[in-house]
Image (cartoon, rainbow, N blue to C red):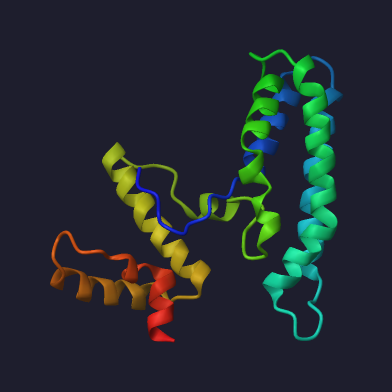
Length: 195
């Protein structure tokens, strides 16, 4: 798998939360540690809804405001969640739904919390998953579709009109040698070229 230079790996809190939901469903009794974890996640999502409804201070960019708001409100909740996870981890049976949820969340912690460092980063990738199609006839078709969807959604995220970008790329790309560097054709670089 090729890694894009300068890209930032961000985790998906919805995936972590979903694992605790599965653990809660697997319990014979309601509540317990899975329910406690879900409360932490729900609190983080409430903060995200609140920051979307707030207006930045005069002269402050939306991204800077979101980062500042998350640092103030989300980081303490994440710290409490991490402390709680570290405390219960030794007591959790590993090969259980709860064990999987705790292990996944702790192993992905660096990525799951990275969204608080940059107001442009989402708390999860639900938008990408919702916008992607679910079925393909072959693995190769699924991979090709995923690449196209990713590029189109990257255009959207960068404020680039997808059709204009695609038209440009399909005009320029055939004129380049097969082994040419094409980083300048990526959507976030296309915006810089046309600005």
